[in-house]
Amino acid sequence: MVKTVVATIAQGQDITARKQAEAEVNKLNDILKRRAADLEATNKELETFAYSVSHDLRAPLRSMEGFSQALLEDCCDIFK
Image (cartoon, rainbow, N blue to C red; front, top):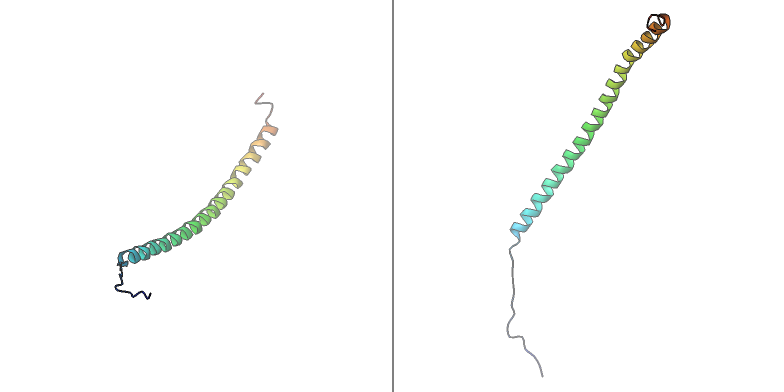
């Protein structure tokens, strides 16, 4: 017995909207990656700046501490 194909059913689906949504997601992910990289670079610059400022502010404090220590040693009898 030989079977004969009488009909074929084809189903199509429009995936244009899905492809557009995927493209938009990829675009947004690229933007997010760039912003994350920019933020990381900015944070490194901020860390460098904070370290520099911290170092620059310690020098005068060390000078004042040294002067205060010398003053205490010279005038310790007055403060007792």
